[in-house]
Length: 357
Image (cartoon, rainbow, N blue to C red; front, side, top):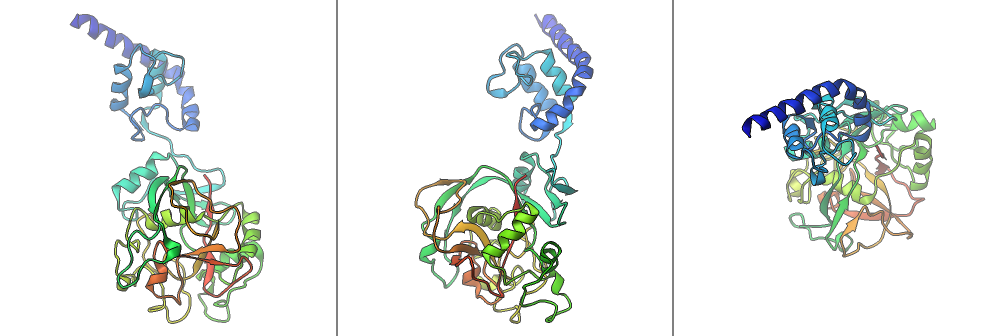
């Protein structure tokens, strides 16, 4: 009867309230495990999740995940845990990091879908690597088309940018918000190999480090616990949800002045990082300033869909991405790639760090 159903509901809620104090000690466990009481996946535990749980009452929970304590039955214990976790899901900060901003700034990550993708990871958006103070932003997992989806105006796709193939990245990664600077390199290594260094300009410290070989970069990474992004991670981060040749949504090379230092506006040298507008994830200088080493060996692309690709097992050259201060817009496309011998260096070649959560 209606009265019986109402009585059952009251009984369930009262039992949950009694159990909630017992379940309060489980909040830390919930945080460590992610947010299992978030049954709707919106990173907040609220009435929507309560509705899912009550709708699954007495069952095994099935696909709803309402059996939070995994004892085989959705019951008062699960309700107590849900009530104890009520509110926003906890944000996880990696143990190597210092929190700067927990959730994406809407003025930086303007796309709501990207903000939701970042929030769904349960990881902090903006952090600093505590040891080096390198600022890093979270790039969420996702699937995208990798390669030259469409040519930029007046410039065809190159063979090494093809075939376009689907790539799925299953894990979030932290990526340096900026190219690594000369001062950051010096703080760890005690030296500065850069051509555009102290003898060139007073603002050298914030210019990207360059004239670093792939081999030499490995020593920096080993000393700091960081790594290079894979080529797929780099392109996913650069595109930030776009399918156009440039991350500003344009195919026009003439449009990239506000986002990139290139051969048409650089004056013939590098510039301090972050002085051009960032992309939709908040990453700067993904186009231009200096080419960036990534971790993959350089070879032609596979034609089949890939999951978490790391490139060929071996080859002769390593991939470089993003173009530099000397290049025209064609070489700054999100899809453009080239290879360099690991021992090569140049005054337009640097790198950007990455780190696993």
